[in-house]
Length: 403
Image (cartoon, rainbow, N blue to C red; front, side, top):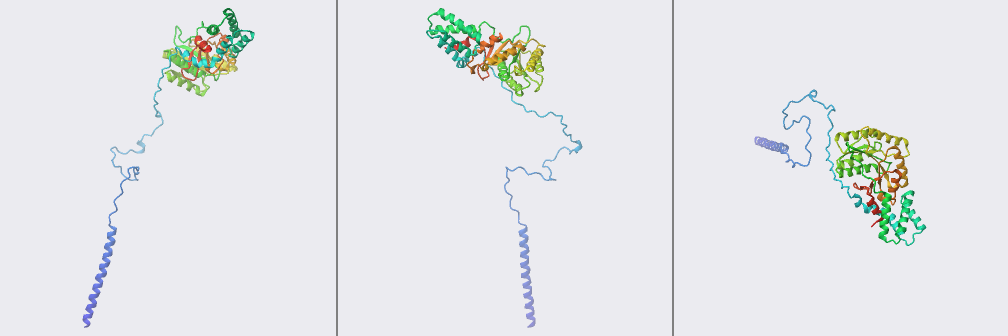
């Protein structure tokens, strides 16, 4: 009996032990299975993300064919290599408008500003009785237009004599009469050609002078267009070295028509630049060299002396064919003072009147010619690149008196 109980107890203990061991084994296996679960599948790669930076020690995917060099074997830059240059697209060469008939095309623009002069004269001349008061009014109109005292008196005397002989005056007769007398005053027999073709040599040399603010550099650039339009090759000399933008401005004008520009350092000797421009023009075999000088006040003696130096240095190559004085037509009689001083320093051979479309004082054409004894050769009638025109007396007078 006691032996049976002992056996039962032993069997019970064995069963309990087996159950306990089974439970413990299941826990261990479960934990191992949890640890050995495969990782979740990787997410789809982001094609927009930059490639990952390599870590230290990572090998390149493609092995190098050549052996690694030491620092001593690597050539370092010594700074002698020229910097990389950026190629800019070439400037498109323009074909300027032909100069023939330019003033005729610009006649409307001129007549808008000068119409008061012609209309005023025709209105007064159309009066039935031309007494002394009427002639005084005619004189006032001419003086207001800056014709000048002596030319005004000459015109009035001529008109009075012609009207007295004519007697009855129709509008067409008066217009023809006034046109004839104005043409006498302006002058039709004068040679107004810009001399750029000397007989025995090349190139022709033209120097452009004037005070500050008259549009001198712009006029030089426009004159280059006039010459190119007439089939001439041109070199530009940027002898205005004191105004920072002058050389750049002139070079831009030149590039537009394929003209070469000679320039020097800012603040450099203008006479040296002018000398080099003529020298290069001769070497290149061009037709004309245009020299743009610095604008200067006519009251500054030192600056005017320097202008004389530029002229003397240029003439070591060859004599100047033209010295063109640029005057602002809106300055009126003050322009005559400027002209007088410039003429004393350099031999002025022709006048360029700018901004003539912006003033009612067209009589300055007559006055400045009388003052200097040289003709107006070119006139500026606007801001456009081709608004510089050869001066034609007939077209000018026709614009004054209208149709």
